[in-house]
Length: 189
Image 1 (spheres, rainbow, N blue to C red):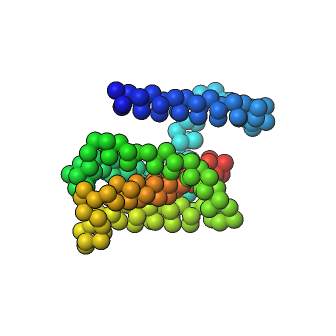
Image 2 (cartoon, helix red, strand yellow; image 1 turned 120 degrees about the vertical axis):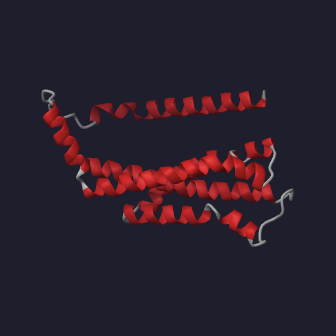
Image 3 (spheres, rainbow, N blue to C red; image 1 turned 180 degrees about the vertical axis):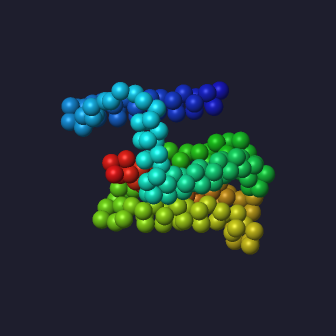
């Protein structure tokens, strides 16, 4: 019953976010750039446009780095439940509580990503964010293996894992926001 309540709460938050963002940007519709004059469909033009886009070096770098990041994220998502259950020996409620900081991570990332890129090269900030996130992600496991992390069952383990999750996910979401911004810049290019 508790999980149904959390699912309903999450769905309500998502729905509310969609409505607020829609209403907040609706007034800007008349100011949007008009689409170019459409041409008659042909496979020749379609494939020409596709190859032109794919030959852009900036797009290639962003595209392949996004593939690598998505693979790493998928591997992490597949293994995190096993680590939480068998390495950290957390119970179902504790594993559920670990998800709470992620909601705040998204809000912090949304605020801090533009601040980090202001007057800086987006590419350098994105690379620094990905590297920082990749170094922070395995930190608790590495600290545990060398004896510098609380033992399983300690009152400190859950709060430390929550703080770690908040920091790491905030950094990775900021990197994803910056990558999305870079893709928008490439589209304009």
